[in-house]
Length: 217
Picture (cartoon, rainbow, N blue to C red):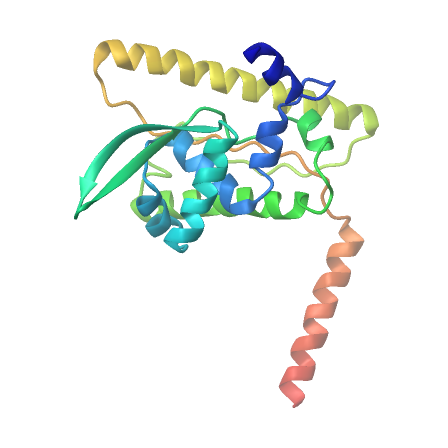
């Protein structure tokens, strides 16, 4: 019976609809990403994300209902009990999963993930860890491709993500045996349709026009 109920939650393409629904709100994307890295309580998440505790608690409950997170322990806190959670599902959707999402929620999800990336980069820069290792990688590679080139780029990014996940899993096993703390690492992969040069020029021109109007007032 359990196997049947799980299969109903997936579309014909094998997409986990629980994860799709769970990630339908930007705040849940951020919460799930944090709980993929470590265990945390709604109270800790509320402070880190600078969101109200009641709002965070609600979204934590939604993630739990969709079986994307699980409670790992409880601790007494000032006459109450604090619940700690960790993720059971990774906070990302493949390109196939992405196609199943309503267009209305895609911008919010993308903005939430980009915000997490920016916050992570800024934190690492401020802490001085971003450039600590000489072999760290940072690149920005715009270009033009045809439809075949676009698909090849998408496939390459997906393959790279799969390899990164396997590397993390293998490292976790070795660290568990050795007892070492490990190296905090973040891999960011993006492949998106950019803006044409003429559109960028038009946008810059519009900004200059607004600045001139402001200056003459």
